[in-house]
Length: 261
Image (tube, rainbow, N blue to C red):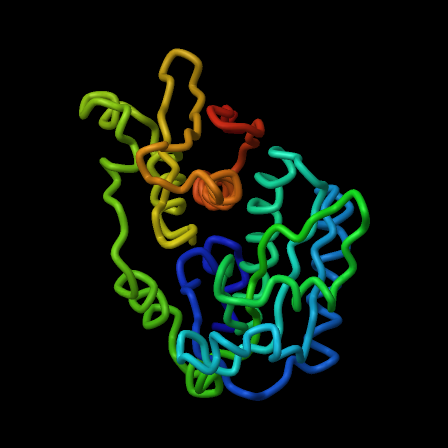
């Protein structure tokens, strides 16, 4: 893995990790994560925090076997009642997730598999903020053996570890002719978004391409039944699309446009 340092590599190997080794995140690894968090929080207007060694936050999930040895998390904190901030939270927190992936750490987005009130006790939530979601983070189970696996082996694990909607489903508003005419950067973006995590794996985002304007758009699919976390999932999917497409920038919001550079 050491030679693979690009975000697209992280997209291609990231999986949801539910079982962790008991080894703690050491101070050096924590400092590296904080060096990623500081500029992202400044850029995004969020307040994402790394919280270590709080297994009580995951006591029930660890006891039931839903998780194993979960003890550390990213607290995704942002402004109250701010839909755009919730989308930004998905976009920018997933950027931290991908940075952690490149460092050999495992992650898992969580909404219900933790004690939210207990989690809030161990992070800083200002009066005008709320705790949106969390990301479990730590060393994957048998992580030393995992570090010996080749990039291609990890890509195959990612490809087969869960079912995913098809490219056609992710571009449900387009005709076959429109798909065939879309540029390669659009297809690469959609394929990267297909690998993005989402609440309960509902993948509630679709993409479309406007040939006249040479722009892409991202849409929340209401039929996915993910209205509670859809904005967060929209942000995550937009980040993956942007990384896959190469260069470009999104406008925030449902239906926001992507301008390819």
